[in-house]
Length: 65
Image (cartoon, rainbow, N blue to C red):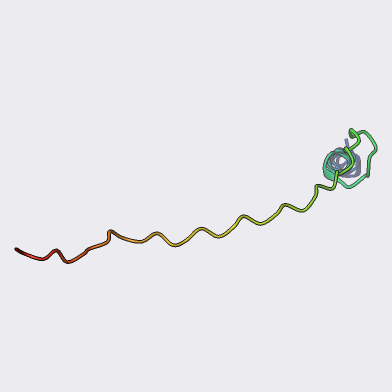
């Protein structure tokens, strides 16, 4: 085989590999992919009421009798 023939065969192999990768990862749309379900809009969640800040123990002065 001459070098042009070898280069042509290797070029065809590389081109085929590039096409396979392009079809596997490329943005082709919905061709060959399952349809995505429509997004359902959920009602806006009501905000949770703010909880009071956690406080430490209460220290009271006790009179000594």
